[in-house]
Length: 288
Length: 341
Image (cartoon, rainbow over all chains, first blue to last red; front, side, top):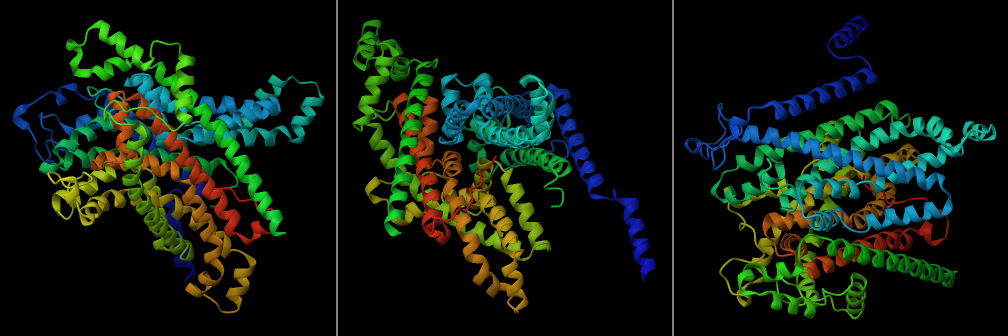
């Protein structure tokens, strides 16, 4: 009995990475490789595949056209792939913008005294009190839509929750003993912020950034879908889906199904990476 | 004791009201300034296709009539004072007072949002409870996987899928719109309206389930790990009875609070769902206003959605103040509604 159990363990050891840490790293690696393939695919793919080809219109999915073709005979697989890399790009810029705002305001709230703290808390409340999508529509409207409008809108709407987390973290580090000692030893505020606080909140920032990503991508697709985001000439997922609405009643389900599914998979992958990084570096969650 | 509570509640409401007033004022100011700086010329948007028929003199007259030629702050004060008397201006695309449109559309949206809210709350709660009671089994894993996947699902895509399956393939329900096409307004029956409501409501509730389910699951797992549940188990209670006696009241409250606090996401979801199903609600009006440059309507909707979210948060605060006996006794109870990142 016991020997058979041991044997089983050995088998597992060979097939899968053994402990939780290795497994988590493994998942992260696979997800990242997958994303890189998608991005490279979107950038490098032959543009010729999306030229209008009226002979091949409205074809359902086949081996030749994995996701079928649309009413102009464009290959949906190519369009989807290009749309995905575009979405990831927009999401990246938006998420970086949001994370920087969150980092700056979170640090400022925690270190610059009571008034700054109150002001920033109020600002966070302000942004949380209007539905995200309405704020996005408002900003996109103000900037006249397009790439600039959507990126600025995304950066301006996603920071509040992360700023709160960072503020709480900085507060906690600031009252730690080693920071107090540093202060007593005459180190400047900047030195402390750079050498004590920043390294401490870096993991939180990374996790927050990764978890921000899916939301940013989804909101980008949503606003583009509503017609206030990227221009209709771009091959964005939101554009593809809103165009497909006209053809749904004639039963062309593949126009909407595959691009949306791909978006879902990409978003889920980012979420996966974020959650797994959190499992790796957050000691409180490590036992989950 | 009772009076003391009433006083505390009054103070709480007063502070909340003050906070709301400052936030609302700031939102009015910011959105006004934002829209003033937008590249869309309100006169151009108003004239639209009649561009060739309207000369420069007429344009000036329109500008003067609307007061667009005055300084920005004067315009804001004019608009603000009109706002305080309840006048939100006239919508350009509907050519009717904004307040009427919002009122009418809100009734439509309210029907959608309430049904989705109740449905998603109940289903999510049940899923969370089942997952926590069966923690670690395959059913728990399925529910968890399902919820995480849902959180990454684009709402509008879910709407499209449901539209394809139920309206195009199965033909069970009509294809979008709030009322049947080609029927006079007075001939529309209640059944028609409900028929058009079902698909959007289902979409909205399917997507809204994830948050409540995961939160309830976590809370119930915490409760099940507590000493009193250990004791109850030692006495032989198990399964549904155990949950009914010890779990339900402890996890129902956070779920209700969370559900109220999610009004903001509900509104966002409603915007997308209404757009997919061409359902004539507030969300669709917001998109229309944004696309066609209807400034008064857009401003009115921003303010209205803010009030809507605020009411949700207020109800969340009040619900656990009023329903939780521990809060009534004035003891400290540090629970805050979890805010989704």
